Image (cartoon, rainbow, N blue to C red; front, side, top):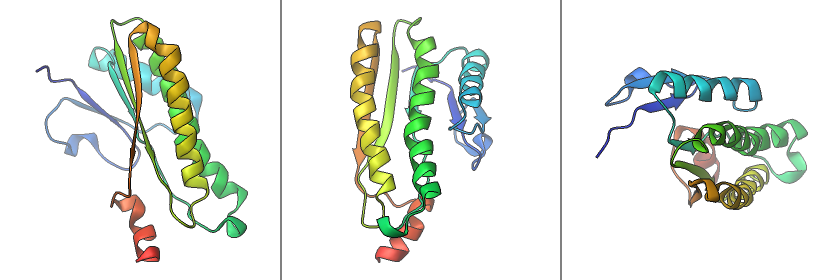
Length: 163
């Protein structure tokens, strides 16, 4: 089984702390097309290619609809949905030239006080369907994984609020 290099694109974690290797740590703003494109290109150049993309950037800004600010709505939609779009668009430029490519988009369900989060995640599911149709003929598989609630640092506030 080949050992593919792992690239961890994040501002909050350090790639050097991950097991195995080699690693490349990059921290692009996932809502900025130029930063995303540069991160994808750097990854392909420094790691000898790009074959799998997992879109998993995520944040929460939970609130009831009547209390939710436009800023919190936009931030969630931009990080989750726009980030998925920008990374997939940049990676497909590389994947289409390879014999294959894989895109895994992380979706989810939402809870009370999270109208923005499931709206973005359901958008990812619709985007995934369309991307699979468009990129399939080029040997690129596009899928979404929609898990239930996952305990993580990002979800600690939700756990505390919901008990």
